[in-house]
Length: 224
Image: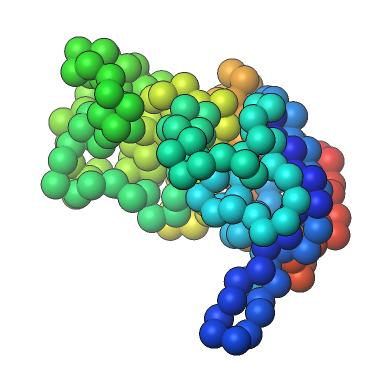
């Protein structure tokens, strides 16, 4: 599903070169559940951004479902993100003034899906994450765990191949975190490929593989 071949990325801060990734190679098979861990500045966020087509590598090759992402134009990258990838963030990234249903519909609005289909698919996604009956609540009327469930529903509504989660439990208490990870496990059991960045060991235990990153390189891969 995901294949990085000798990928490197360097950021330039004025005249200073900051290597973020150094010749990283990685394969993630369809249906895998991978946790990426590492200290601050290790390169894990850069790795996630490249996998999510939010950033481009300077060197190396990236294939997503067989498509050469490294050669994609900006419009092709946007299409890849919308068609193949669902994003989940620590801060939920919901639009506060609109309700849960409308938040989940947003990716389909960008994709040009008609209103009737949007509503039906959004309601189905909210039911999957256990929020049936909460469709018309705004973010302010929902708990943190419920807001993250809305974010997950939004991530899966276009039926992406890959779900990318950036510290998805970082803003949640321990019990709610475990509930969210159980939901991730259900999505993975249903065939979704999940790539998750986390600094929490207890959360990483839910993944099938833990990839540890340090100084821009993968230094350990642990199967669970």
